[in-house]
Image 1 (cartoon, one colour):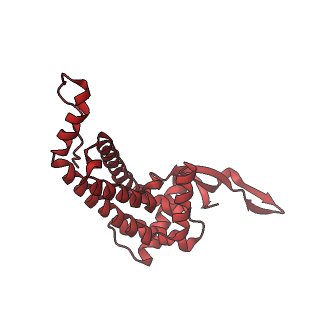
Image 2 (cartoon, one colour):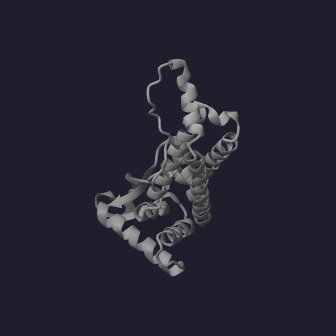
Image 3 (cartoon, rainbow, N blue to C red):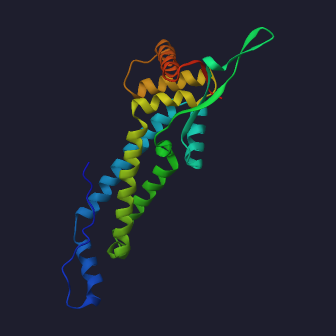
Length: 224
């Protein structure tokens, strides 16, 4: 997606004191700036709608864990496994010895943070309003616009990473309870465009669990 950015290069002026004025007039006369804000607001609205849809599909424990990951800057997913060497005997019976293992991480957990995208919309609407008065003639105005558009691109990139099918599968493993794991699996299937119902979610979760066990050579796996 092409994003217009402010042109920061201007011909040298004989009088350096006039340069800010020249920059202001050049920017003010550029109709692309207003269209850039309008386009930014459309993209921000699309992002907000998509984020609201994703959040509506995810179970509460998944959203809570994603918020913690974002706050702690730690997106690691740790599961507990029982390996062949972890089977122990007590009173003649086999006892499961659970061992933690990091199996990956959630890409861009901040992507569905609604506060960030709402604040971005507020910033763009402020610039849209300010463009009609003297504030819209300042260099600071266009620096703020550049930052808004850069943040918009970053938010779009984050959401694309988050919605990757392999990333969505990991959401089931940040939920401790089976009903929440199944809800996360249904959300992952639906967001990936696959057929989804209760039976499909159960089959998908069983398949993903088997893949984890095969990958790590384990007998059992659970979310701690």
